[in-house]
Length: 568
Ligand code: GLC
Image (cartoon, rainbow, N blue to C red; front, side, top):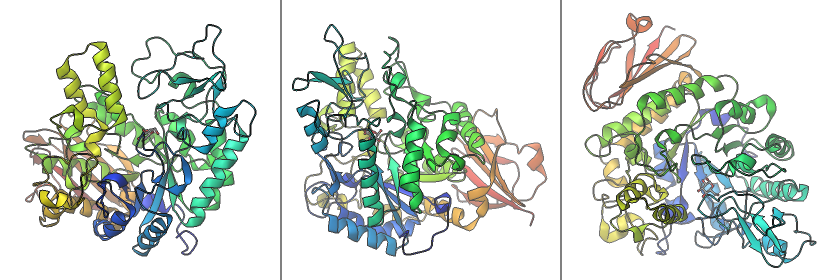
């Protein structure tokens, strides 16, 4: 697309991205796994929603130890999902509908089945010997550092044939690439060019803040509990900006594409370094600050509920910090996070209202919004009845770790229910008919369906004008209609209210007033002084009979309203 049509620069600032987890989107072969032809079939649904870009989770050749984040061949499509021809057709069809496609770039590590790694294991002096991070054992034979890996166990694995350890920040089947080696970087840049020449529109860059490791290999402090212990030597490392700038110069700058880096352990000051256009690195990053608000003594897997005031502080900080110096990505959920409505809303009595409220709060902010598949239906977490139903490597690892720690079974169950990545990975329900595999598969799904699909599915949402789907569609339409949604300056209007999050966006003579209640009861909301005597018109609300004119409000549970003040 970038080659055929002259594209506006920074088109991604006006875009809404929809994330597809291919394995769980739509199966056309009866294999129980989603595929590329399934995505093609559902493009009109996405066009109807109004999204501009699809982000595809990895679809490359992979043994799927970490569901595709372990790539064995960057140039091949995983046959489970289809062929290269299917992919080309997907690109073509999407582009025809005005939808761009970005892919996942997983280059912190490969699969241990990648040819490079197989060769690298053979000896210390072949072409690929330094493609990965190999270190000699310490004098006592132990691993070079005390780092733990993300999915449990140490981050180093010993290989007899070399008499050395290799580093893997994730599973042992995901060895880390050695970015210090210029040949590794060139091989990655070549591969990126291959996909750009094919016509893709950008990359989401997996754990990109981890690619540069400190070369003095420090041990982590013994009490590194909240953080992954390897962060000490691997996150925002000494050469990360140099590498990304080089990648930008050699590849990214040659195409009119978008980039979003996944940057764990990165604060808003560091994010500016990645996204300030003057530095020529990335367009935007995914930070985790709002994802950390319900972390507990053992990190992510906890039974703690976030506090609205913390959420407001975090989102406001990011809106303010990046104003004019970078660009925000806006997300509630993705394939690594539980469902937003369960985590930040109320997924029973006010499921529809709170799902719409969350969408409103996020989509009216400054940045590029991401919708994770099923979020537009208000899908919620899945309470699997048996642990055997979980598939994810992280969840299986956490269960083992918590059992070894002797944590109570009830805590283990609840924290997994609240945080397992499988909550986001159950199949998309295209209709409510269990006999037809809810329109997802004619075979046996690779992971169980959520039990509530008779109620929550695409068909029922499309048939109901008041569904979450139509609210999202309207939010996306507003972004396209009003430049203030894209470019307006953000200002928080009620920094201390314990129930209500309100902010404005201002561009020239237009101002949006966005007011969102997180309360499950009625709240009398008084407009702050500067807005008191202004006249504004209602643009959207998640209740039917909200006042049409801006003024004080009696907000109902999870009510969300958007008014426009227009003095032009
Ligand atoms: C990222 C991905 C996650 C994967 C990990 C390792 O965090 O989003 O799904 O497990 O990186 O590649």
